Length: 310
Image 1: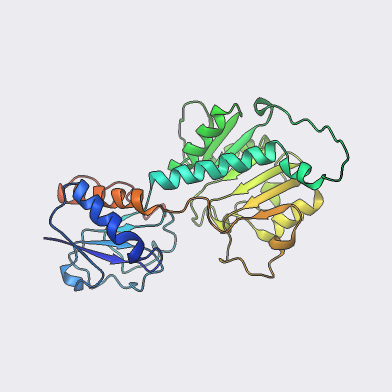
Image 2: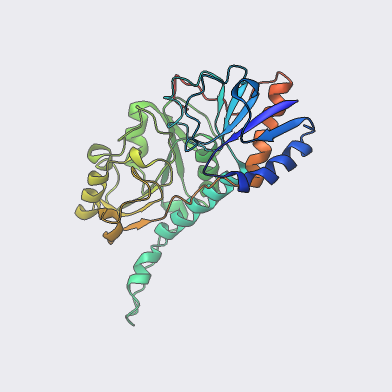
């Protein structure tokens, strides 16, 4: 018998019990005992989210892996009691959702749809946008989500530059890395998309200095991590005209406080962390595959490198 502990308040047991059981059956894992109350020493795998009541992993001495339901692991990695292998969630449904959000908002800014929404008074203003091929886009972060979004935009004709902290080659994209590569990537970015993980090396990366490197009038999309951006510097760049607009899906504090200046700013659009929600049906299949791999002594999918923080 393989004992699997479900330890998550959000997303919850009601959402995941049926999809997980179906995914286990589909993966040929007929001897799974999935519960929310296994005795710690009997647990083989933990299906986990950081908002769980489980914060001390010390009693789980026989646990083979902790399988997160979240893509981000910055709230889990610092837990010193977690010494088991940790796998982050890379969910095909989440990837599709992120691609749709990024592509939709990139097109919205490219076509300047907000301008026409703001001018519905009967005045005939023929403001013609450039073609996609004339609008360079930069995607910071070339993980699973970053590459998928960058490729989607490239298929629409945008010249896309991707930046990562370590060198990567991605077909159809210009790829850059390192500090000098970051400066180059920002210098051409009329639309900037943030899809970096949150680490000590990326926290506050988008600040007054880096925003000043963008072409004047650029637009910023942040569906990645809130603390990548220095809030006050972003507002200042919008107020000065250095940035034209920003669409933000993630924030330093969530839910975004009612009195936060982002809410009332005329050039900021807030969406409530919906760009890449984990889908129970597809996420359950990722969990099942990792348990199958664990039992077969195969490498886990999406195992976190704690030295890098993701």
